[in-house]
Image (cartoon, rainbow, N blue to C red; front, side, top):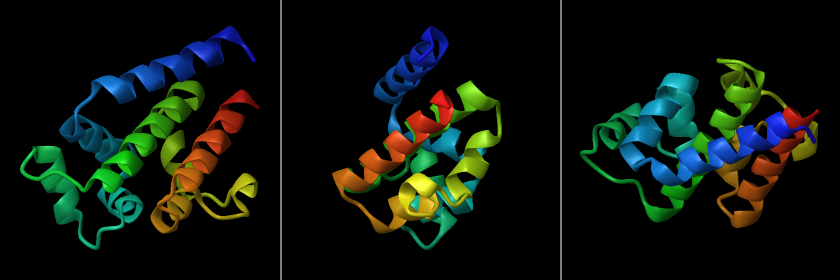
Length: 128
């Protein structure tokens, strides 16, 4: 794996650690759109996404973990492949995820294993 990809993965991880929930949700909303962020977070209305981005409310702990992972993955994909690629990647059928989209995996599988599968699929994508 190239040094550039490794540096990008580390930078995405560092951003994930340092950012607060409002910043993460705002970034995701810009990169993916409010509807896709709501779907990943498993909420029915984009109002919740706006409320998290504004800092008026906080998501549940499990939802925050999925949002943080989505942020890390979106950052990794966009930095490696170019702005806007992450939105398409999250929605596309992924053969490493049983031909499900990464967004659907995060929406339906709220376990650590599901999140790890999405992260590994993203790492494979940028390393390809």
